[in-house]
Image (tube, rainbow, N blue to C red):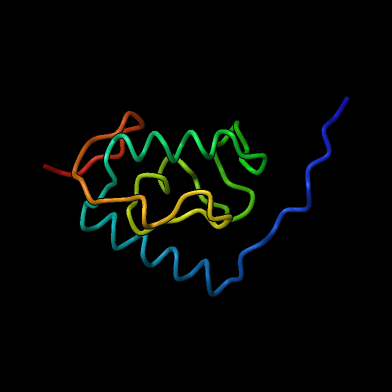
Length: 101
């Protein structure tokens, strides 16, 4: 009836702090990945057992994936997508993440 989920791997506090610093820098500099990369990242997250679908929040890193997936300096803590798959763009995404142009 219920599917058993593996134990959730956790990130260290120092790793989370580094991730937040990089994400904040991307947000203030209005850096975003391309629309195609954004959609690919979200698709990967949607297929992951650690995504809480009701909130789009990752159980591993604790991030809201609609935001994290749009930032070029962000990567999946399970290495399902990484910095290497991103390039900077200033586009508006369907979820409202946009730059101030």
